[in-house]
Image 1 (cartoon, rainbow, N blue to C red):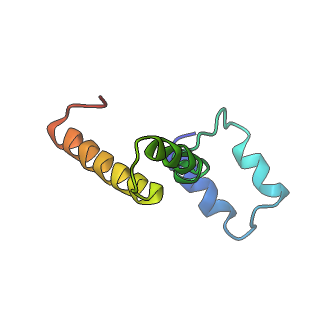
Image 2: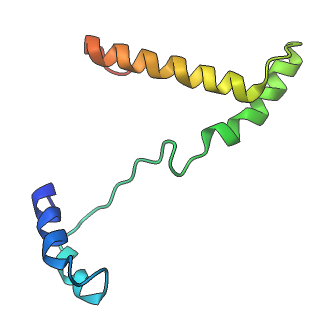
Length: 90
């Protein structure tokens, strides 16, 4: 279902709500996709314990949460630069 079709379904059914009547308008949907990164997967919460253990083995006093924040910040900068230069994913 293209974005135009989705918009039409939303407009046609906006008065109805998400009840049984809406199901007929989405029967042609073959797949639903979701961006899991950061929404469903809690990378910070799941990785900081491991980062903390790693930093501790290296004798570092750096806070694992702060390390993660800086890591993600740098990753976003690199992604932005790659997009500007049209380099694609590394």
